[in-house]
Image 1 (cartoon, rainbow, N blue to C red):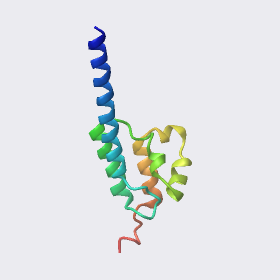
Image 2 (image 1 turned 30 degrees about the horizontal axis):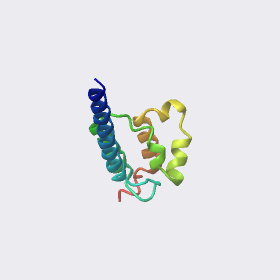
Image 3 (image 1 turned 45 degrees about the vertical axis):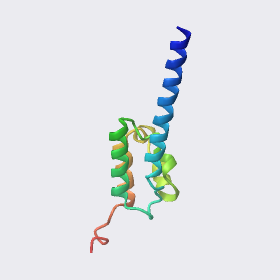
Image 4 (image 1 turned 60 degrees about the vertical axis):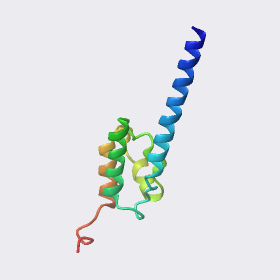
Length: 104
């Protein structure tokens, strides 16, 4: 049984390494958002896609993907809102979304 346990252990380690590598590649594909450098709608859509693909909540990594004014928007959210991807997206869109003037 020790050989079986060892094989299972190494199998789990390899699986975890593959998952971490996959997540790392996905998160690297999302640019750091500062409110000026990227379209907020496209950025939040990428996060939704990552959440859908991984079936994981991405709200825990969002602060690591924000800088400057965008981080300030996130930081000023309530603890409840920081746990809700839709609330974070809404706040970022309200702060950095296209205004009516930008549409012309």
